[in-house]
Length: 347
Image 1 (tube, rainbow, N blue to C red):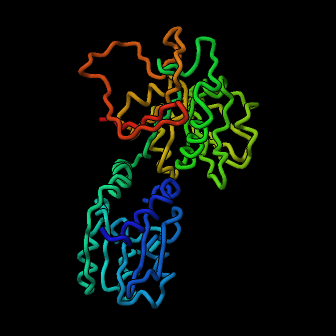
Image 2: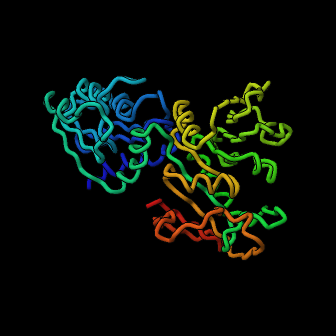
Image 3: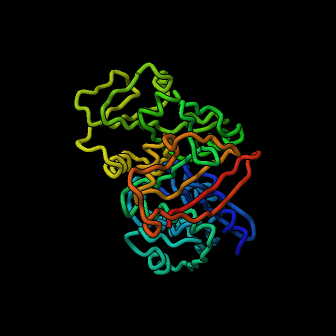
């Protein structure tokens, strides 16, 4: 594996979560054994990574090699095809780590016909970076992460509704980073009233996600803290045809049926590529029963809360046979100062 291709993949990881409906991509231009250009796709509608790198390299790119984390695009969108830019700069070779299965045409053929050598070097690390993006693009739905903070017995709160500081400060900091990596965070009315959260990142140069609220009835207390911050957009989904907002940062969307699928489809059309579910047991359970989640992150505190199962993060009225229950695989685990972080994917 070339060090330069690794650099391109690392650049892509650095911008993961800030490109909306577009994939995070990194690119490195090399000529005569030295780096002459670097680039990353910084946000939707901005220059792609290859263009950024070639603009930096300028004439020094001619006869060189460009390393890219993802196969260069071949279609006109908000920007021209990257294969055109590569051909214009007279590069000798293109090396990329992941083949883009969503492209309308074959970039390899276009580049080879222009006399450019193309090498596809599969990389498992890079493939994981784009797996959910490809699925989201094909389905027209955001990548969905469900986040849960709970006790060892799965409680998000006591039976009296006490939920502050079940997990520790290290978890809180990690959740701030998680929010930064997503375009939007969704919650329900019950969680707003119980916890009065703000869903900000509170990290240096952090990007606050769009706050999405699901309330079928539309009975929302507009005096809560979340509505006092005019800097970040709030989108409310409701079945209440009378609900309106007089605040500029609040958008009310009235749907005939506020199903998870309908909301996700609408969010994707509005540019939300990655959605974080940070809610109470009711909405969390609803998401976990769907086919739309990509990742489940659970933060466990070494505590046993007990009581009833009312505030357990996953609970259903019906009893399901073991053969039919939702199943997950653990892909990563971490210890955060005596709290455990589990990252899981649905099988």
